[in-house]
Image (cartoon, rainbow, N blue to C red):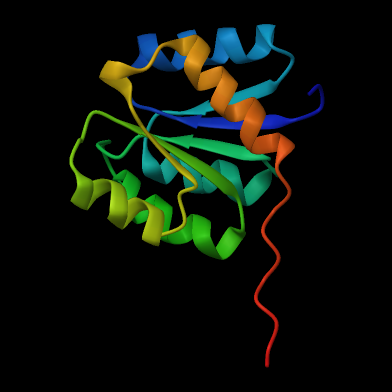
Length: 129
């Protein structure tokens, strides 16, 4: 998995630092953005293989960032404390491949999800009939 880059977009500094440390230990290169505006600026300057995206953040929230990520064709895992089928469905409709509730997921489970996501090939776009 080395050479794979993960952008962590999370305003809780303790959690973002823990994620960055654990992902680095697992062989990933990580960067952290603490709000949506900083995240979009970072995405404009660097390529990332996966984005871990919180939804409730200052400046630009995760929903606004998720709208932009679809155009960038970046694999996205939403990590949020927002629960509920409506939020999960909305995030997936907007392009998130996974939706993880922070309160019920360990760091190890999250790392496993990142690894599995990167092992999958991007889905092929549908062919015109």
